[in-house]
Image 1 (cartoon, one colour):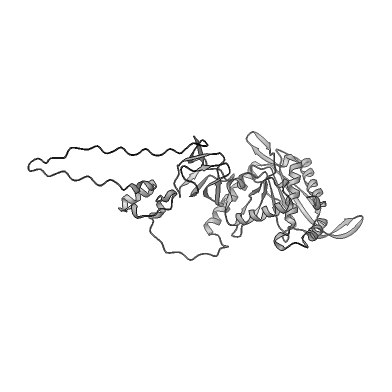
Image 2 (tube, rainbow, N blue to C red):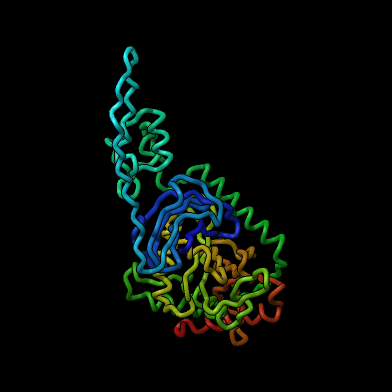
Length: 391
């Protein structure tokens, strides 16, 4: 038997609230299947399972806040059938009670609970008993129609809906707390150092304009896709920038899972990862970026996307500040911050011309690398951007 536990969905996470089960006992699950939704300080996260098997039991109630590592479900070996509950023993007949003269008959035993009571969570059964509620007439929202605690709550008048783009103030405050905790830990534990390099991106922008000329808007590439691909290729070349620092030391990653910092409309920041970004074509990478940003802002990310990143890129877009220095997301060991393209005087073949230039700033972990490796990484990014057609 295996135990499915509350996963850690970030360095700052201590607990999460189980808000939805997507499986039920008896279901067969495979590695990568989404089985539950957990609410954290950063929103609702779809939790995946990382083993094949059969769901034997769901061991946590919806709405329960559980610490990382708490038991959520029991998973049996693949092909194993979930055990069925044994039928209750038949009641034994008792001899009829004969009343003695002048003695009243004993009171009748209360009726046995309805069979439908079994299809309810323990908390729901307890509340139903306290309120003398008949569960047989209630359609539950849990697995197989089981009655959950929320099904017994009195209906409340609907509050006016906030605009879709707005996030509840409480959620924003909690996210800010989570970000602050992770960044404080990062600055406290990771010996950061930063190197910056200006890169001429005029050729890349000209190539991009030609590439997009005959494409509909929905299929056009953004300059950010070229930046992400160049960063992913550079991370594959310079292994000291790609991996995790653990208790045993630095563990280089075998692939580049590129974290993309996404600014949420209601405030806050999240950095889900695109797996094997260095192997994707520009069109594939662009599609993955669009999908990731849309789901991040809708708070429908997968747990693996928040935990598998091996290096993160944070871009200010085309109208941001000139330069930015970022803070590393632990347990990663590097973060590349990209400023906005600026038109500047630039020397080309001994002539001074106007060119679009971007500042790339690498924050790196001094326990793993130094200026030599950081310079190699930035030089690789520059080299790849001078040949965008090869990306």
